[in-house]
Image (cartoon, helix red, strand yellow):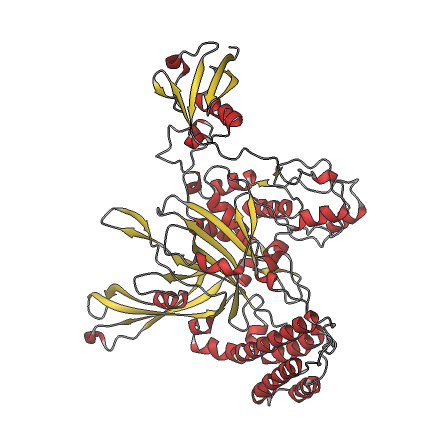
Amino acid sequence: MAPIPVNIKHSGKTYPLGLDPDLPAKAFKEQVYQATGVPVDRMKVMVKTGVLKDDTPWSKVNPKAGQTFMVIGAAGELPKPPEKPVVFLEDMDDSELAEALAKPVGLRNLGNTCYMNATLQAMRAIPELQTALGVEKPTPTPAVDTSDMPGLIAEGSSTPAADAPAHVQAVSAAPARPALTGLPAALGALYGTMSRTADTVAPMAFLNLLREVNPQFAERDRHAGHNTNALLGGGYAQQDADECLTTIVTSLGSVPGNTATGEVETNRKFIEQYMTGRMMRTLKCDDAEAANEAPSTSTENVLKITCNIDSTVNFMASGIQKSLSQSVIKRSFTLGRDANYTQESRMTRLPSYLFVHMARFSWRADINKKAKIMRKVKFPTEYDATDLCSDELKTKLLPVSRRLKAVEKEREERRKVRRRTKATGGASGSAPATTGGDVEMADAASTAVTAGGSEAAAAPEMDGVEGAGEDKGKAAADVGGALEAESAYRERELAELEQLVHQDLKSDVGCSVSGLYELVGIVTHKGAAADAGHYIGFVKKSVFHPPKLGEEQESDEDWYKFDDDKVSIFPKEKLATLDGGGEDSAAYVLLYKTKPLA
């Protein structure tokens, strides 16, 4: 039916509009908004039957040509065109293209799939996993023809063609790894596509395989059987991001690992090396009548550690300790009945990547459903996991752990000196420049003395280590003088720390040799309901853009926020807002990476 010419009157002015009775009333309100500037949410269009609602059928209104409708509502600011015009990739020059491709891309929500998107983004903080999956890293040269790049990319669609430029084909000529199938192959294809495009990626192929591997993720929402999403083919239920993570990691069990020299290891698997810890559990009966019953000990592999949350937990570390010491009821063969046991758990192996599950969802018998624990629990950006370890493992870790802490303080002092020197106009390796007044040498000198003093303070621990005297001599030479290149310091520190690494840990590829971790990935949950809400992923910015040695900036500590297809910078100062305490985003899964020695 042809549009009916009608008029609307607002604030004494009359506007002619075309009313299409085949479109819903909400579409007409949008026209009114474009003409008057009155937002739809605070607009009232008066008709014979009262106020025009979004779902009011036009048959009840029976509009006629020339009819005038009264509009009530305060006009807001009219929509403005974007300040900067939209520029397509094919229209960018080399520098603009490099900048656009540097930012990581988001994932399209395919119908309540934020749990999967957030999990996949957090797992990108494991670069060794992408290597194991055969993901080809893009060349830094931006001169690649992207004129045929669509606005939305499907994963696995960016394989270089035979006639592609030589530098693109060279990236694909990496050493061959065993061919992967199933979910690991789909994950590798997805990550490969995400690393080569600046557009949102639709992870449809990976999602379909995930639902085949675990049909739970294909469950339909029982409360959305008649809504618009269901009619459009959606209606999938919200799922748990932690369960999604467990499914993905378990499915990667066939991915081969690496040797100490970086070659393919066929006898060990990647997950076993880099993401699996070993937990020793000891059960001891609390009943006095079973005093002669020997404690039982068992060992199991774990992919994550749990932070139990109750009314007494304010910090992640205390919640983890609660999960490691628990009371259980089991049958005692000595007593011939059920008895109370205390279960103490300790780590006998720490992996390079440690997942911490914040147990925010628990079953409530009174309402017969899962509920979210919204208590505020602080989590650290740096975590010392040696307290979780058995005495034997702790003895192996502590020499490196203690020395690495001292070394990191020295590194921070050097950063301060370089920043201060740069701020005064000098080079990083020169003395502070004169600024027109007195030459202030005290700060830099005292800082250098501090660094040298820290080295000397830590020297007693190194008395039995070969080469320690040489390092102390080099550190002393720096006192009061110009700083060396940062790489020189790191080379000496690495040699020193490697001498402290226990031989058992050296031979265990993929384990943590210090027990010290830094936070690199987060998955948060937003909302009050356990079976609803919204998941968002966060990854530390330095994962995608490693800072240049000796030129670290404070902005390197910022994060990327992955809200499905929306990717934005998340300042480090806002991390505390993810502690929980309400319905807003609260940390649910944390990913820690063992600190490198160099």
